[in-house]
Image 1 (cartoon, rainbow, N blue to C red):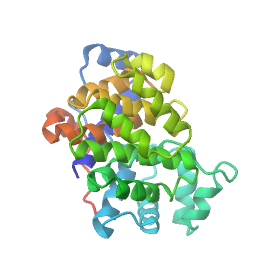
Image 2: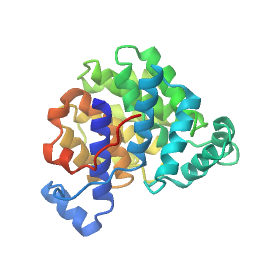
Image 3: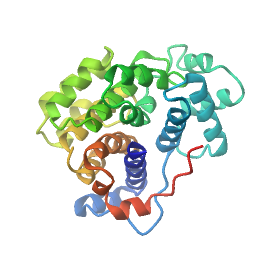
Image 4: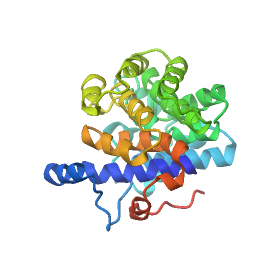
Amino acid sequence: MLALEGLSVADAFGEQLLHAGPHARGLALDARTAPVGRTWRWTDDTAMALSIVEVLARHGGIDEAALAAAFARRYAEDPARGYGRGAHQVLAELGAGVPYEVAARALFHGEGSCGNGAGMRSAPIGAYFAGDLDAVVVHATRSAAPTHAHPDGVAGAVAIAVAAACVFAGERDPRALLETVVARTPSGPTRKAIQRAIPHLGAEAMTVAIDLGNGSNVLSADTVPFALWCAATHLGDYAAGLWDCGSVGGDIDTTCAMVGGIVVGAVGVAGIPADWRSSREPLPVVR
């Protein structure tokens, strides 16, 4: 539940920045003052992570069919959570009884999605299996299956889950963290970009985002590598990591969710600003 807490507050924080408008966002970023005092609505990142946590609790791991059913149920209950176009299609088909293997594979002319959605929700898997990276890879791979059939979409889920597992298990060295993630991530564009993130340790966030991406293309390969760099850079400072995500624009709620779900493993609940937690829309009880 700690990973879910870190992910959901970060997701809601990022959503506030994303929809604040350029002027308001600029003022918030300059002052590093979050818009507390109103409810921060969380997005599909948290909705899908809730299903991950639910299935882990019920099954002791990821059961693909159970996860697909949980995704479809939560989508039907509240489809206006910022789901992407591909997610709308897949989740509606799952709700209509289409097998997840068929629905996920049908996207993008049969190639499946290589988007960032499987990564945005996978940090709780790393937290759950912290200390057993083999299990992390297996269950993160399974977690992608209901929506992301493309190998690089799967790679994003694995990379974020492995990073979370390492941090929850006590890793605090940024380079060692990223090197472990590279070693465990399947080959492809996401893995290559994570490798490029390592020499950027110590660089400015915008410089890194120009090279690695900021999620504007909503792909695993242009979202996960920057998020991992940001998490590795800010392992001791939850808020600073999220402000860096906001400063580079792009898919802010998703990069924030990834970073928050990882970094909370190092800082704990106490490391999340209390007013941010109280501003986040309450989470439903996991069934």
